[in-house]
Structure formats: structure tokens, C-alpha cells
Length: 291
Image 1 (cartoon, rainbow, N blue to C red):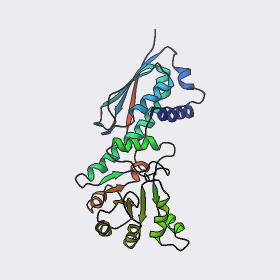
Image 2: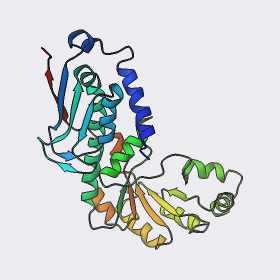
Image 3: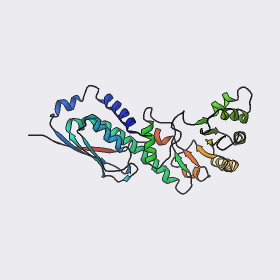
Image 4: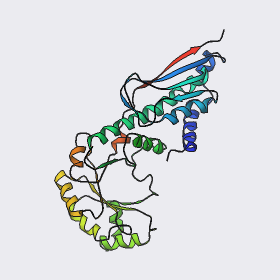
């Protein structure tokens, strides 16, 4: 998902946004022949993500800058750890500093939050997944960060799988067809590789969805949306392994363990990407002036 070409494209756009006509401050105050070294230092504990993105901010600014990323994506670290080092022309290092930090702080914040959710459901068999509630243009970065934290990615885009929600079903059955008949007709037109997920918000909606068929040529996942814990347990028992069971809605670090213990297979958490706090990482820069 996170290819070098995609990294370069997004980071280059961010650099262009931040310094469209160059870095006036660095060009004015910093001698052209000054060199700099800088360490990416953790100000708090966390889980690292975005090393390649961080490096790209500097190398795309000035190809003479060398970046050594010392932590792998997914590594845990403690406050005070040096996660990467940067060496090169001081003007370029200072120009790239904020963009590099913006990305790595955001991505490490997501991976750190994801790890907390993953740890909270350890031993239950439920997997933590993200959603499409991502920052426009940064989905690949943010979902990579979820993976760094031990989470799983949901469908990447609307093009990747069928997810029928209440509004889709309302339109699909507007001509009077039943939900099973409407779903069967729609599924028949799909390629055999397409995965189909259907969202329900009441227990009595489960059986009509299952009646459309399950497995490779039917409904593969049923999402139980905003169910109580009791209804989640009842839904899991009713589905009885015929499809993957996903829970969504009302998920927090305080509730996720209890949700996982109902027996669901997947818990999708929008907060992983839409509410993660940027991690406190700093770039400690040292400039050497040439005599």
C-alpha cells in the first residue's frame, strides 16, 4: 500500500505547500555552506511508524542529506530514544524539519493508539481494524501506521469491496423486492473475487441477509452496527460461523475488551485514524558553521 512512488508524491506536495518559493528564513539566516546534524528524539513512549516517510522529507528537499532511521516501523520505544539521525546541508535540514516531523508524529500517534487497542483485546481472537475515516490524501500513510501498531486494514477504498449499508439496502429494495432477492441479484453480477459485507443494526435483519447466501458467492461479512453487548452475543450465536462477524460503533479503549469477548471476529475502530493524537517527537538540530 505504501509504495515509494506514493510516498514521494505526497511528501513532495507537502514540501511544496510549506515552501512554495523556498525557505526564506533559512536562506536569509543560514550560510549556504553550513552543515547540520539532527536527531529525531522521542519525548514520550510510543510505537514508531513512518520512518521512510520521514526520510523522504529530507532527501526530497536536498539529495545531499543522509538519513539513518534507527527504529523499524512497529518498534516500541521509550522517551529519550533516538529514532533517526539526519546529516547534511543545514538549510535543507531546517527546511524539511516540520514536514518530516508532521508525518512521523501523526503516523506514530496512530500506531501507538492502535497498539493500545490491540493489547486491550489480546487473547480474544478478535482483530482490530481501521475504517475509511482517514485524512483525505493521507489514507495510505495512516493505514500503514495502523498496521505498524498491529492492527488490520479494512477495504482501502470504495473500489475494493461491496459494503451494503442501510441507505444502500433502502434503494436496493425500493422496487418491492425482499432483501434476500435484492442481494442475490446484486451479488450475481459481481466478479467471483469480490467480497460482500452487509451492515445491520437490528437482530431481526440478520436472517434475511443470511438468506441471500454466504461464502464466496454470497455475503462474506455481516457488520453488527451499534449493538449492545447482549445483542452482539446473540448476533454471533445466530450467525454461528456462517460469515465473518464485524462489530462497529461505540468502540473505545474502555469498551473494546467487552466487545471482543462477545465472540466477534473483527472490531472496526474509526478513532484509530480520526482521533489519534500526534506523538511528541522532536528534532534536535546542531549546526556547524564553516570558518
